[in-house]
Length: 121
Image 1 (cartoon, rainbow, N blue to C red):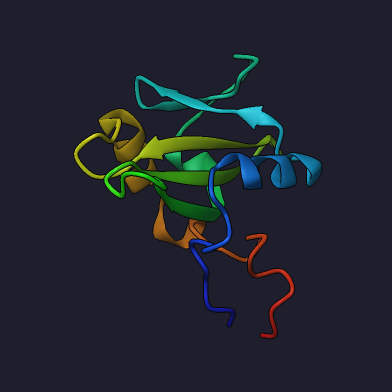
Image 2 (cartoon, rainbow, N blue to C red):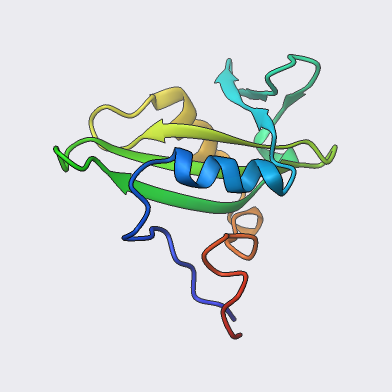
C-alpha cells in the first residue's frame, strides 16, 4: 500500500496543485452549506456518503506558520470532480471541517494524490 504524502516541501501555495488537479479533471470548486457539498454550478448537492476524498495537501504560510490550510481533492458518486480548501486549526471553517469529518473513513484515500502517483507500491 502506498504511504500518503500530505505536503510537498517545494509547494509554496495551494495554487501549485490546483492547476495540476484541474488538468486531471478536478475542475469544480466546492463549498459546504447546510451539511451538503455543493458544486460551483449549484446543480448538485452531495451528502458525505456520496463523496470520496482522493487526496489532501496541507500547507503552512511561508511568512507565518500559523497560516495553515488543507486542499481536499474530491470525487462524488455522480463523477463530479473538484476541490475545496479549508483552514485548519482555530481559523478553520467548522461547517467544512464537520462535513469532511463526516465522510466515511473508507471513502478517504490518497491514491490519486499527485505526490503518490509515481511512487512504488
